Length: 493
Image (cartoon, rainbow, N blue to C red; front, side, top):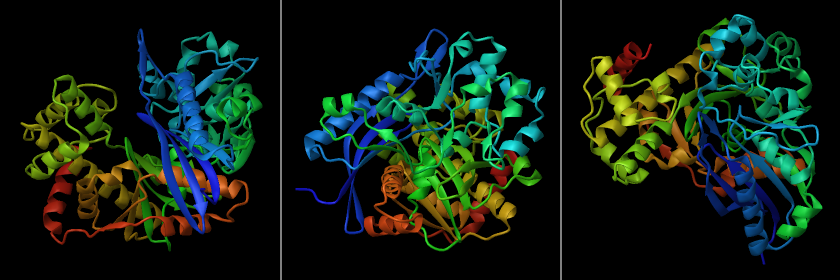
């Protein structure tokens, strides 16, 4: 018989999802992955959508898998997801359209159009969020500009994890960490930037109340409880943004550390107690997303292992099926510093022939064009590491602090080559783990919400007691990395 407190974390990523049980016993948290599923865009005509009801079906399967293994007793449930995307709900509470994927082309040109109404500087001053055309504000503005009839039918919108929590409870709540990703929330006023939205024609009455991470949304509905064989436990808004949940699980001590949530996106930043909104952060396009326990995440979004994922997809279509371990091995054998790319270049953001796009970038920037798959992956990974160095330097400039430790968490920690490249490029001591940082953070925030543990510091101590951390020392050959970085800075303007 399994003893201890039992939580169920639903972790939704942009390419996959998981249902993960967390067992908290004697100061240690053990995770058990019960169900995995794919989660990708569905193209209908010219629009990329999310299959949000299919996701709920998969989460329900995860709930059933829990009851089959652990029985009825469940202390809490929480869902986390990527940010910015949302579902539209009608006056009767029903979903009125499939949510649109953030990589859809409907936001092309929207930032520029929006800044003619609300100046870019004013929007940043109010929200502290970096400009990315996938942000919720540009998605909604595109609906206004295109006179979408759906807005007239909409009573409330909910971000993706909040939408799933609503499906489980029937209660609507917009969690703080996700709200901040929309670029519509004013952290200084602790409320939606209503006057900005009215200027843009975005209706403010569709925005739900914002709740703090670690809030109880409601209880599992009796119908779901009965159908899937668990008690009607509390459903928590843990830290509903997956990166916020991952950062909550960083096993850090002291104050001289930065975090890197490594996966489809690489999110590198510092944990701060107040949003940092000034001319410097605006010029560097840094973002201030909500964190847990009254913190903010001063960070930069970097287009991460998405580039490798797309390369693998394209090669798979060509009949060359290589897993990530095989691709990393090829990269480790390839010539170092053959060329560099800008991971955040617009060409690499949307689905496409990524190997060809990388080759074109190299050719257009008068660099050596990669001739094999190992070279392509090596260029992508080294360029990511160099992007990390640039962001670390930016953070140190913004905060006036020196950071010595880089904690890498998330699925990308399994790429040992990238971890070492990150240490070499930044000159920092790199500590990796946990791999399932988001699920750790999700479960521990559930535990805080229902009073099983008392603080974020206690949660991080539990993480340290529950995992082993791998350490990567930076290379002492700084010269070659300095040369590569100079090349990166010249190419990636």
